[in-house]
Image (cartoon, rainbow, N blue to C red; front, side, top):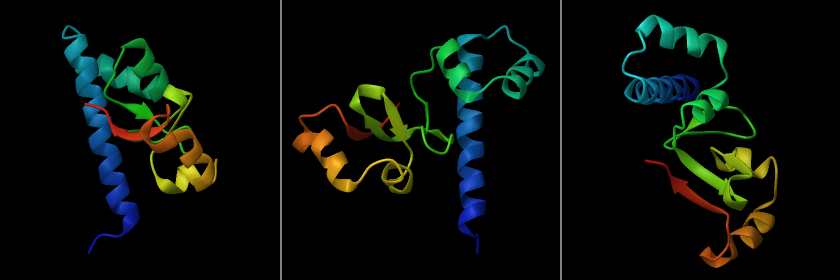
Length: 111
């Protein structure tokens, strides 16, 4: 049976591959070696910004890649889990921002 760390590593590797494929789709002339160099020398956030990848975010707390999670105040912050969210605000603070679905803070998936 896999432990939580192994599962998390697998999830992050899948998300990394998803991001690499998104960069490759936007830049089909890039070689695999060049894409690997980009990923070795550039932060995930910079890659997402530079290549305008709209299907991924980076957790503002732990720095992990995410394709679902909390969007806070229309993208000021992103959190991949309840743990990361609550390391930065209480449940009450989040619910105030969520405002019964009328606010600019919510849980979502990016496609």
